[in-house]
Image 1 (cartoon, helix red, strand yellow):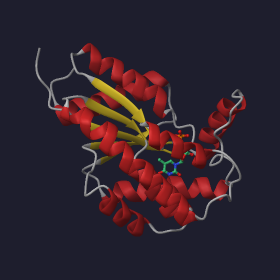
Image 2 (image 1 turned 30 degrees about the vertical axis):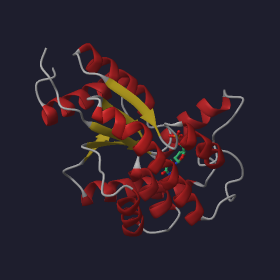
Image 3 (image 1 turned 90 degrees about the vertical axis):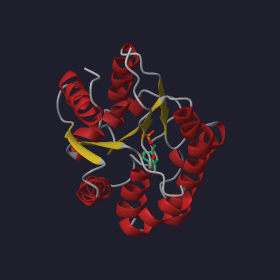
Image 4 (image 1 turned 60 degrees about the horizontal axis):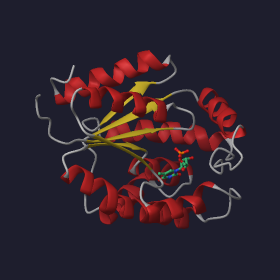
Length: 217
Ligand code: TMP
């Protein structure tokens, strides 16, 4: 079987974009082709970062200042990178990560108003310049995504909906911010239309992975 060098791929988008379903399907496809895959998520992905997640995704929308929120997200990410992501890549695994630093840039930098460039700088400092090999931005209208996400959270007993409860303008800003990030880094970021059925979107993802990294089919 052909050897593929490890890749670090991140998945971004507003609420309800379908990231986790798409990651699972992509992981299955890659695994079936002899590639070892680690699926992980942010905030979280290692014990310390999962503890920080609890502080961030629950409770009042105004429980943190924007800067505290950005720093907590980034602290969780530093743990995650050192304890989960880098070791997995070192072992030769492909890492598929549900959200990464672009979430801080879009949510805290854009929607929370801390500034896209400022948050990019913070990520550069905290992660010593580490960047994903490829970032998918799943783009869909805010009302469609929110309706999906709210429906999903309503079924849970222990709701992680602190960000979903922010106002509509907040979510519009996130969408615009992701498109700005993609325009700033077109080599790394691929924007995909996510308002379509699961299989079509998965086919788009697979085609892009094949195109970028070659020979997976
Ligand atoms: P999830 O719903 O995708 O698990 O993510 C939890 C929430 O945290 C989601 O609403 C987006 C938000 N978030 C940020 O605001 N900044 C970040 O850096 C990350 C990773 C997530």
